[in-house]
Length: 169
Image (tube, rainbow, N blue to C red):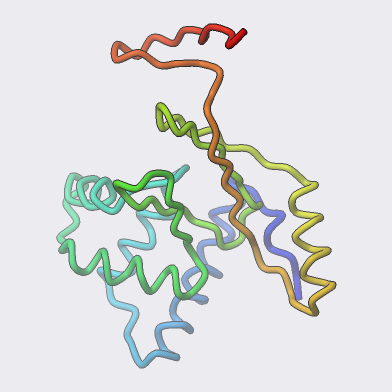
């Protein structure tokens, strides 16, 4: 089995056809159709460069004159998660965020619990550990989600300006 996790966002035009094929096969296995609305939602997600909220996706799609309902987006998001194309990334308790994972290198996150600031990073040691654990248990790794919740050393003020926090001496 080829490891598609080593791809980057630059490879997305080449990944578009496989992603559509994966989604079509998944839908067919569930007795569902690959509708134009589902195709538009998948295209809009692939065009995104980072995590997104469903409401944000809906507004962007409607702004681009796509006629798609909120219910259709939520149902399609659920199907894309089940198919392993996107993943839910909860960064706070208020709103679920999603991101494309199929065919991309794992991207891990650190979230400041005070400000909600999100830092994305990649660490090969985490991927090696994931692979080692999977091998030990006889599983085939296909991806992972690693999130660190912490307090950042920088405090953001309401005006968007950042200042260093005082040392706790």
